[in-house]
Image 1: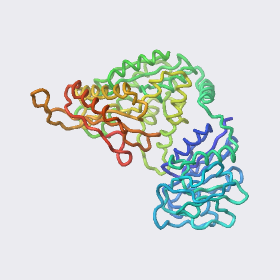
Image 2: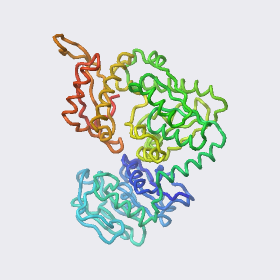
Image 3: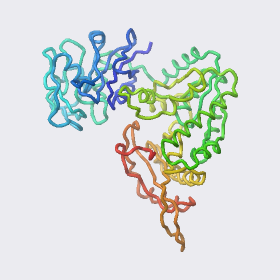
Image 4: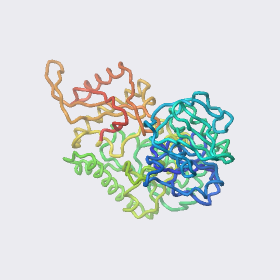
Length: 507
């Protein structure tokens, strides 16, 4: 039985980061809605209460009865979670004079409290709240303060319950991981035995039990998630798995051929389908980004469904859904953060049971599992690539000629990153084809051709991203190579926007 930490999600943007930090401690955890605590789960070792966009005294605030949890499990409240614990036990939470956002430093803390073991004096922490705890109940004890926040952390006297008003899960909190380790390991007693190897062993065993001799179909995209899911399933059920790789004509240059060869090298049973003509016909004249996405999504479902029905007696549809897909798609605030290609459309249309072997993993964990499985590094370390492909990197309508130009320019950029040893230093990179033309001079002739924008970002999780500070010498060479080698382009720009406020993709 895999021991676990339960994170109750009250709607914070950083809830996923809490999960990632716990997993980095080789401890399994699950993020569940604040009101969906798994009762009678003997594997639960402790509970973390997340932050929230609401104030605890707001009528819309998410509130729960903790009586079934308190006294049974250790509890750590973070930001809203800390305020909720204090407020519901008679403490005071009030609007701060000014919103407390950004870096702060621990001015004092109880060094002998288990939560602060190994935490350095004046350690930097990250604040992000508009309210603050101004008074705690009599049976609560203050154990930390910052230069601006009097009650930065507390413990309930005689109980394994803590609250911190800062965010230990955020990278800017210098000793945040140490604090979380103190709670997870020292307080909750977790053994830190969650690893890629243990995941593979348990997942293959459970897949064999779940699927038996049933046939399974899986849609491959060329990305790391679907690829790792395919290799796991192949180890579990072998030839009972059929993989379908649909080329919508919007992949990177030569990607369809190269990725098919990779899959065959892995011993997968793969069917490659060139459906580019269908997609180009359906996208003709369409410029609106969301409409393009919907056309491509529906087209993929139609092609995949047609191919899948050629296979007899299929009972399961496998997908490379990962944990952030599930969390975002089931946002407790009711807001659709992002439409995910993996979690809608196909199961309903095909009337198949759904198998998602990676649904409990974050992206970095998927890569670790892939390496443990012995998959080629160029498949594992591939940058994220949008499901609609180059269609969302062509601003305006999509045509075969525009795709050709973008594929050629993108190939120069990506191959350049690899040759200069920069590819693995960035999170994601690509080229955007702009809906403008510019005047240029080539030889003695005036040109009027297309402009492109290079996009390269650094990130740890894709939730936030900063533009990559690539060497000027590299940028100069790439610009020169694109203009000289790609017919139809005479100007290259570089996107230096960060996320937020911009997004990584342009559409």
